Length: 417
Picture: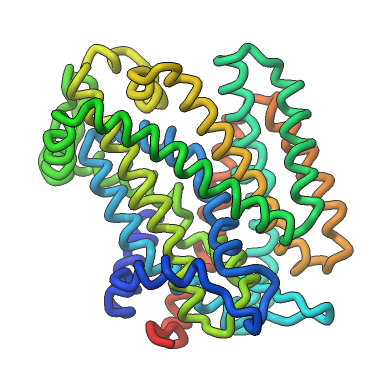
């Protein structure tokens, strides 16, 4: 699966003549929307809805485990995966805008299921993808996130998982019951705020450890191509391990190749697939290149500075060890994890909703949302090792038809207006 996705990233990068160089144009376009354009939400709302779903525990815990299992070189592979994955995100969203459909009420729907049906003329594959999207929304988009919330709130503040599960379900329910307008409006406020908060904390840590930043960056670059051992003997990693865990965590956190960003892109007010695809491509840039990159530098710099702080701790706690340098650092990180997980709950609810509309029409939305709210509570109070494994499997199955579409419809993807 990693080889398939990385090959797709590389293929589209070259075919689209390094579309990544237009990233700053995409960032500028994300703040501009013409009232005459067709769609339900602004380009910025569509972007932040995508970021809400992708900015999550993968940016914190995922980076931590990548370093623990793959060594510091995993960060460079993760970062490169984000850069190359921008081309795949662009391709997904371009096709989604091109093949989206207009409902009688004036709303647009799109995503890989519509591309599969109208582009590849394969209704069975489209139905399969939509079913997998619904299942994924209940798993990685819902249950695993609420479980992460209760783990943090229980360990830091001793709160009951049942009480936290009910609170998370109620708060999320109040948002998602309002539909895409409500989701988009909240995401426009929540995503930038939590992103700035987390990045600000990371920059404070970078300043505190400034004498270790250049050595950390050097170690990350060297270890990606040379066998290495972390400071203090924390982990020894081969080149293969660095590439494997860095690429895997990068693909997990930005979801490039899964096709979910294309679902949000289809709702944007735009008549130009190229411009909206550039805007959506910037989600991968912010998520993996910026957020994960900064987190990785913070982790490696802390290990170089204080090897004893990471000795005999779980792989998922490397970020926590770095944040312990800040006053109330564990609470700052805990709040960030909760905020990211709540945003993911909200963002993924929309992806699942669009899949339900494709399968059953708008009549199925109410039942889906009720089940989604219930699953938030269920995920908060249960052990989710099985759900994590099942979610990984479902995501892999979603990738297959989506990547097939990108290859077969590659001639339909343009890198110009």
